[in-house]
Image (cartoon, rainbow, N blue to C red; front, side, top):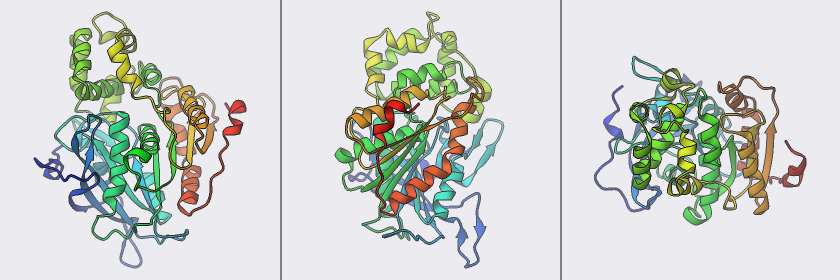
Length: 405
């Protein structure tokens, strides 16, 4: 699939974080004509904007802004939701903005499904404007996507909110409340953004954050996805971190065998669909020269383990109220580490609404325990965030944590 020239970053970028680099109309793949002539659910604009990566360097990030056709009936100006997508892959053709244009991409090389489009459209139907980030390196063609990099994702999401205000035709105002929304990879990005907002983007007035199934502890998450249907995500995380940290690259090069190196290269251009079909249920022990898992290799090397430890979410107090949801049977982004994030935030005085989603075990390692809460909790998550965008107060349930599963 050919990546449009729009996604090629220029040689120089603006100095301000969130400054627009360029825009163009983005045709939505799923759209209907409205009775008043305006398209439903809204009018989309493709974006490129400036952010700062985890090494403190300027980076171009792409995404999309959607101006809703529905009116906002809550209090105050039309609000903005900065939307962080779940795992889409590492090839530039997998970006969330491309998935808005092509909700289903099925070619000989690519299988990509815009499964987050439903949540985006539901937010638009509530009258909230939505800005979607493609994250660092997903879409923009100058580097690999830095999958689950805490700082890159948090910065990209906050700067998307900044960029939205400069989009031609945007109806959001300077006093518009901002919500952060994401599940899985997106839940981690939203959680990271909520923690980083006070220091990185105090001008972005976060009214509330929904963090569903957040991968807060990557050491635990690596063990969850190893051997699962989503095993390819191991490659995406390793590829991203070795790009950001050259010292880690030398360690991985020394410990991966020919099959591992080939898999990492192969995965770097894949979307989630073909990664599941090609590398689903792969075990990382087949990728290492020692026959140990990648988690064991990293644990045995202090420098590599330090890289993962630096990605831990929960060491800072989140800005504003947060709703954290996690499926109690989730074995891909393990429930225990997501629950621990709620505990960590509560201990820091965060305003946390913790929501365990209790469902039966729907199958080990096959993604069902991870994906089902994405759908079953979606209406409640959007309702909770819409209340925050309307100015309604959230009451923390941290006091219930000792008895919550």
